Image (cartoon, rainbow, N blue to C red; front, side, top):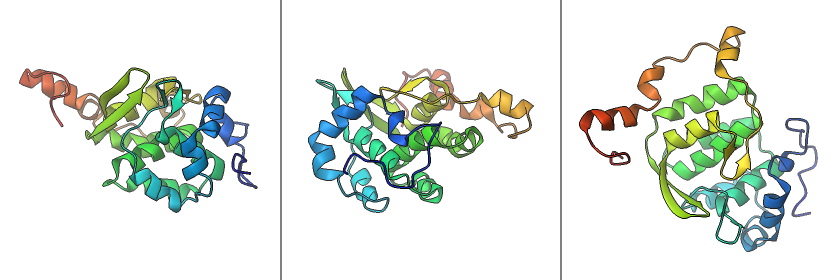
Length: 203
C-alpha cells in the first residue's frame, strides 16, 4: 500500500499521477530508505514538516540515489492534495524549499494557465537554493529554478509534462500579458552586468 496512489485520485495528463516520474527514478525512490522510513504515512499536513527539513532540491545523486526532495514530490503525486493546499505551500514565503517543492508539483499537475499565473510571481524571488545532482552540490536561485520549470523539458532529472507556450495562451485570450517581463526575467543577471560583478554574487 505504501507505493499505491490514494484511492479516488484523478488522472493527470491521462495517467496515474505517480507515473509522471519515470519508472527508473520511481523504483529507486520506492527502494530508498528515506521513502520507507519517512514517507510511509505522510499526509498533506505532516509532509510539511518533512519539507521544512529539506536542505536542497534535485533529482538523483551519487549512485542514482533519489534526493529527499524527489521522494516528497512523489509522495505528493501519490496523495494528491487539494489545489488550495498546494497554493498555500507555494505562498509560504519563509519556507523556500517547501515553496520549491510546491512549484514543481504545480508545474507537473496544474493547467497551463494556472502554472503561469502561480509560478511567474516567483521569478521575483532571488533567494538561493542548493541543488544536489550527480556532480555534487551547486548553487541556484528560486527565480532560475522557476524559469527552468517554465521553459525546460527536464528539471530535477525528470521530464516535465508538455506546457502550452504562454504566447499561444495570450493569442487565444486565455491569459493576460505579463507585466514588467523585462524587469523580472533575468533581473539579477542584468544588475550584475551593470555593476560589473560576477554571476551569483548577488543574494
